[in-house]
Image (cartoon, rainbow, N blue to C red):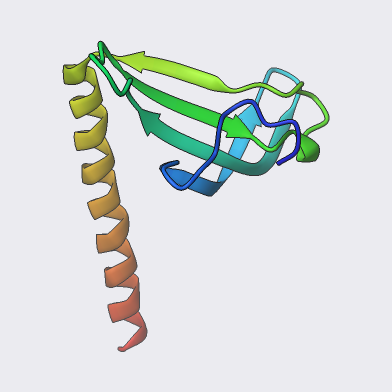
Length: 101
């Protein structure tokens, strides 16, 4: 991504994910960087950051979105991600088993 807002390095959580930006009169898909971080010293919150590759977007200027989470909020998001990941894996496993019939 050129003109990147987020710093991407070996510690970035996910360098390249599929993402969609949706507005009232547009929807654009692009690769994105997704990062979860906290300050190195005396962190006060967890940050969830998302930046879509602006070279693939027409409707949005280069930007990154950040959500600031308290520890209990970060744990709620983590638990929801785990739950939904299990559902998707179970569905994938069920569909593979259906192919064997």
